[in-house]
Image (cartoon, rainbow, N blue to C red):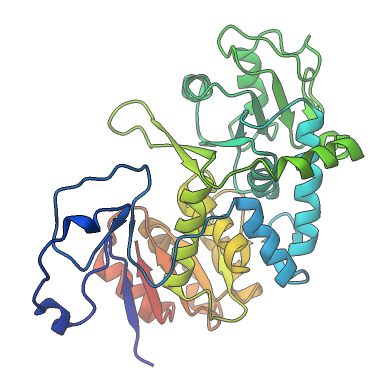
Length: 395
């Protein structure tokens, strides 16, 4: 089978040369609606609604994040959803969803409510994905915080979006998250959990620490057990009030042209983004898809291209390590029989540059997605020829 390079297009053009030669029908003003007729020449925009869509063989999905995950749980309860190689964590769809419900009820139990903003600050760990779907089920807006943020950067981000809660590990590498939060909230140690008050972060009242008990904070394991039958009922009732166009995620730009800007995304945004990514790569027809996912979760590539695609298409995500490690990626691909791998061009360069690359059996890898920055053609060809990737989607 000859290698294929699948290039992502930002718009769908005419499918055949014949369609390029067709005679266009005269513009009919009565056609004006929320639809953008991509087979017609441009016309003066006259949209009067907040939604516009192109004509496609596949309609946009009008589902919430939780509805998508629940559908995959019902179809593939015993299939592995998540594998964290470094931490030895494995969860089937059924096991994962049970903990998502527990976490969502726990968030309600500690005082969070629909529309609140919860920042997840940390590397690629199981709790990141858990919070991604627990907040969505509870109608809480997840704020994706760069795990490398320093004191002033995290203060700006949390204050900008009026964050009510933060979930984080105690520290990661040189980043001491709890210590930075203490500097931003000087009275945190003396506060009761859920009762933090700070002039620098006036909206923040709750800190949940993943891996240790810290003064003034909740431990995640306690939050997981905090939900009572009342909170589970509240969670069930809440599902009737959640709408697919509700805001559910805030992601920050990199800040290369000024301070980072928070982009607010709805269920509709990320569900359909993930849906069409999966369709483009063929996850809807491929069997036993296992994706090696070294890209960061705080970025759209990891959380939408990874987490949301898992929820929609029922694929398995394999996380090699909490922080990027090129060698760990190769170990994970071989050990877990990954069929796809995600990465930025520099990640692929790093993997291709591993001295013992030839010793790894990567025969299970069918393809991958390379995105995040311009992709040099030589890197693409080397990934195909050296790593044996038959298909590579460049986004």
